[in-house]
Image (cartoon, rainbow, N blue to C red; front, side, top):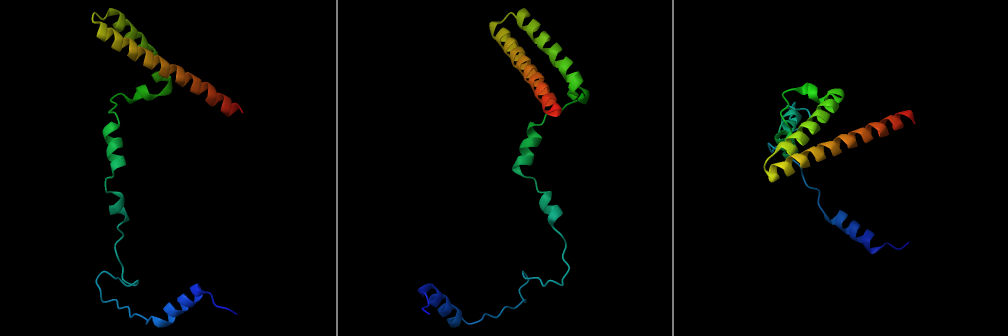
Length: 126
């Protein structure tokens, strides 16, 4: 039986190395029977970048009831109408464009939410 060069090299390393003595006198090495505090809570409490971004971007909603789906739908519809009326009443062409663009974006969002409701109900039926 022929020994491969790799096996020969491993055997040479194994037999030529002397066992190292490990001592636990270093303060960084703690034996298993010593009780130690758990630092998981401290690690989890460290603020991270994602948490900071979410916190800075999340809106401060004073009236949380507008986030309920039934109320939000009627609120969005009323808001689209108000934005369109403000756009028609605006004297400045710039303000007119801004109000009309905002009403179009919100109307598009409302339509997307309606499509989502249809898809959701179809999925639940299927």
